[in-house]
Image: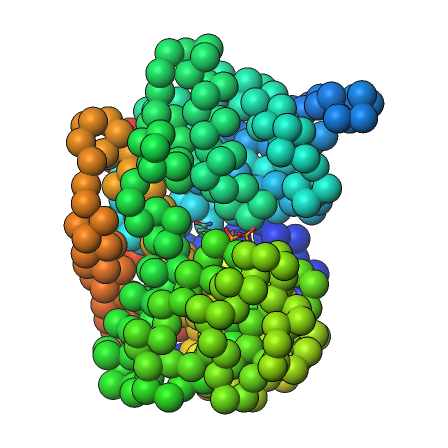
Length: 421
Ligand code: NAD
């Protein structure tokens, strides 16, 4: 399964890492160099100051970004991240991933991402409200229901989207379709909150059935117990898997006999961490990534599996619930040791799929039942997993390369058909 390209350098920036995967596909697809240049650089980048009056009375200025990578296939689409390390290059990488992700699952959007460099855990609800409104107004010339549609990502949630929608609507008139991932009461879609985790589980189930891999009794470790990780942990039992370890930013927990995920959810809602869950052993995030288990599900931050620890990963299957948790060089190490990686642009696409359903419901002013949302999500995840798997077999490449081949060729076709250049 090894591709012909040389080993990737170990010190790539986040956007260079995503472009590395793009170049592998571009080479195989024989894409013209001028188009490669176009598609490895964002179409538009906006950096803004976000001044916020803190509860203390002090004025603090945060850095904010919105990067629009490609709009060839439709309005720009991508989450908004609140994180101390939400730097421009990271946001650029995440925007490019959105372009390939929306294309691989074939929803009619382009790719974008936003970020504000802040630690949401250190801000009060009122401060977060003011920060979100200021950021929304700063980027408002670029966004809109048919221009660019933000959604939640790390550190943001449905409440953040409610504030964004309200701030935008005050200036431009009532516009629920300007963001997705809203609360149900404000035009959000049933099933959106669970969608990314549910999609991860749909994808894992489909992969298992395509490869005739029994999942009953398989052990699983989940890094990150936020919106994505907690829903994946909650639903993966439906496939017969046992969650033996989970972690968050404060540390991890392990129970070899399996964690009671429903009890853990109750504990987490009160203590805001998984650490200290009664009856479980304490472990570090590093130990979790190297745990003796069947399936590893990174669902937190980027580059957690890197050249320093890739050869110590014991799980034979890594499902990328987070965005780019595996660096290109680590990906090569995992491949060479015979492990399977289900890539981010396929595995975690459930969020953007249901965001598309939410946007469609908002523009049609017609609400779907949750059953319909989940059924359609499962259908798209299965169809996409099958397509990636068949391409991987046909082209003798990894699932990541296969997903990129599908995504990149769709974006190239759309760019050429538009005939703008
Ligand atoms: P979240 O903020 O709800 O949760 C993040 C979790 O990761 C938390 O449990 C946090 O404690 C943990 N975490 C943060 N830093 C960590 C660290 N250094 N080590 C270990 N754990 C750490 O975020 P989320 O929405 O669940 O997103 C998680 C990942 O999934 C991100 O990579 C995001 O880009 C990706 N993703 C999210 C969505 C979505 O719909 N929310 C969709 C696609 C991809």
